[in-house]
Image (cartoon, rainbow, N blue to C red; front, side, top):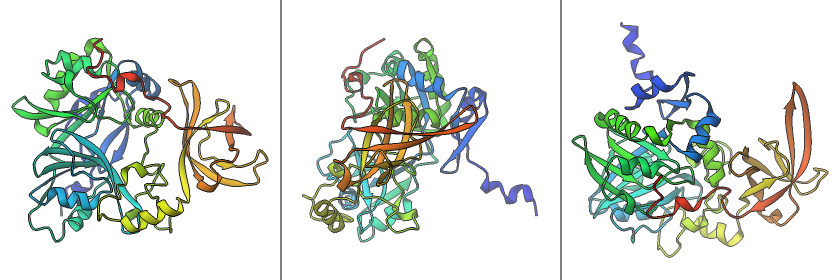
Length: 398
């Protein structure tokens, strides 16, 4: 037996953009996403973060799961699966959705693109093909195709992102509103450009057949040379999404089909996603359980916090008193925000204690010595970072 071939299927897959990314990953800092070799950072995570906030950067989202769902039952099936009503979604528009178990626990979140009548694309962070097939049971006219390994995707985010695409000569890019998308011809392939992203800033995501990925990368970097374009990895993404108040799997929530312990997953109401749950629909997965959750109130509520000082409250508990005798929650994500100039966090707090005083105990290291301190927290309703340019149409040209 050839042992070299025996384990070939176990090797990490390479993104269609890998050739260009590997040349720029001077730290050789890689992680894994859905079986793909994936950049954690390229040179320095904070430098990459500042590119997102001040110029623009590219983030490889090819490992994101992409499913084409079409047929006369496509809308009906999706509308039964997700909690949001998608029946009024217009062609060339995108909507953010989540879907749940019958117990109302969240399986995943993602986006639905309406390509045309009876044709949609669903994107999400984790594999969901098995769940889609279960959700389609009983529908006679529906096709589901996994596009994950055939469609390359790259996110272009930051204040100069529009300028890059405009200099590429993409007609109509100035008219795209948030959650719009267009499809054009590029390199003898169809290129879809959506005004979406995971940074809270102006940005776009580009989707193309994998054989045209390198040509797309080269065109982006040629047009972006004078606009500060740089690649960025997972660490910078996590910083930007926290400032925007976006949830991250395995940080703010666990996928319900993967948890072992009871209620170590979450409901949409616990994650402050009640606005995604439309009870006007007569039926959808988890509807009964979610009605109960809304009526009784969720056990926990995800809460944005501004924390005194500058020491991130990573993996910290939340208390209702300065002496830390009454534990009422836990921090899910935390950082010192360079853009906001604040010590920010998101935390799961027991809903009944949301109006209590909030204190956090922070442990930190200084020159190999361990310290701790207890500081006050202030609740925040709005995202920490959401500049006007993120919504402006047409965007400003630099």
